[in-house]
Image (cartoon, rainbow, N blue to C red; front, side):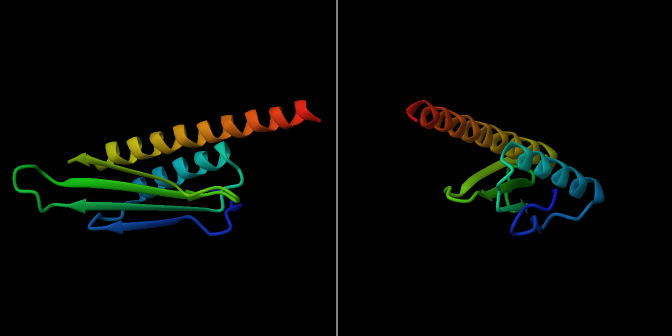
Length: 117
């Protein structure tokens, strides 16, 4: 991330082994989120593996939690059977869509204020 976050990017791994490739992918995708909404104040990402399911393989969950000033908290929580990369992709894609919607809403509100003055 470019460093404009008030709270540095936080990545938590639970029962997921650390890998440089995974870390790089998460950081790349988190930096993209910041370009969609440059005033993000925090971005927390949690990756979790739950291998307790008997009839299915490992379950992976990815939770992304971002905040912007004056805005509510935005949370995406995605899971995937046996594929951590897919869970990461799906979670970041969902958060990207949410921040794009927020940016669109904010631009519309700015235009409405400009036409009233």
